[in-house]
Image (cartoon, rainbow, N blue to C red; front, side, top):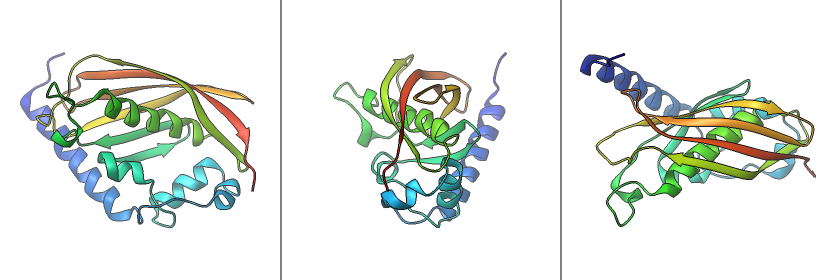
Length: 181
């Protein structure tokens, strides 16, 4: 299926509207206390973060990406690849790909966890399909859970541009554990 320039421009315009809307509601950048995290389900945590009641994580400010939607085992993050993220070869460093994907797949899993449960990445595998540069103004990392069990969870994600092109894809395994208040 061919994507027209109009389709790309419409998608980009919609993504820019989403970006402005979410940035207006996110609270300050900071860290939520472990006690507060342990007392909330994953979905409650994200709902409070999107409402500006809890801080958004500093990594998003550092690497210029934000969560757009997190609910029910799905997560969408949106980022601006820019020159500050470049490697010596003149394209976005693989660490940027990995970090936005790790955030998306991890949050997809976190959104399904009950209060008192936490997670950490055990493994993430990222395949970078094509280079990113500042010529692509926005990309999305879209993630879905594959399986959430008692001790481990898996999820998959992909980075796409407004033209629908795939830039990278990933799979993760996370450890689920009891959080200590």
